[in-house]
Length: 78
Image 1 (cartoon, one colour):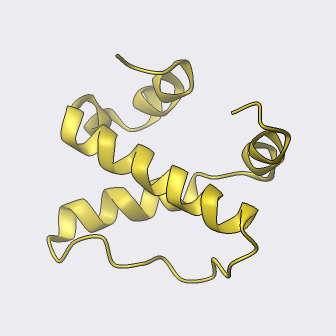
Image 2 (image 1 turned 60 degrees about the horizontal axis):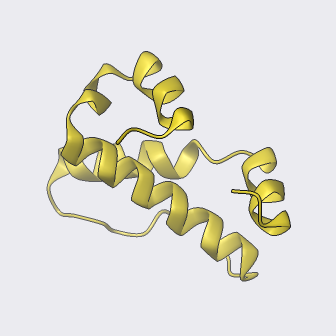
């Protein structure tokens, strides 16, 4: 099932209609938020895959995290 927040990203990035790409994108967002909440550095995107397309989708997911997403995670809302 597609999350409400994911629907916004799918409109902007049609490649996320592919369920595998959407999962990679969401994994990147969750990983980025988890590191920020834990106080770990997030200046470099970790290697997710050596397959360039997967890594690109992961990088886009990583970069899509906003300060608002982080605040919601810290409050336990998201």
